[in-house]
Image 1 (cartoon, rainbow, N blue to C red):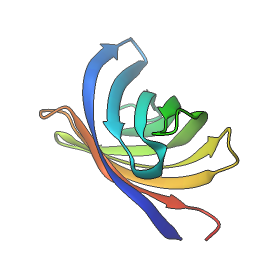
Image 2: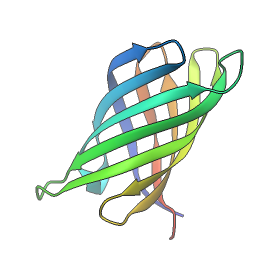
Image 3: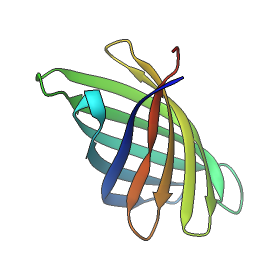
Image 4: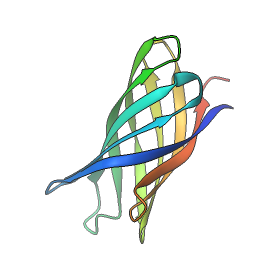
Length: 118
């Protein structure tokens, strides 16, 4: 897999529900330009230390192209850090793999995105 870009999202809001947590964030991400991202973490264990996530992204490239993407993956929490790994399916045909670390204290989502098929 070829790396597309590293990213460093700043989390703007965190919404907590009884069975989920939603993170809204934004960052500049390589060829995708400005990216707005919303991810909902769903716990699959009684201790709420692991689970799945679903999300949506919208990007606006420097050329003004808008790309939409659906996101899905797995996460695991250790202390104040959540590790996440997942797949993204974009409206322009891109299919990507992403790895990220969410810092609950710093409110950052930092990682890398890769082209699945390269």
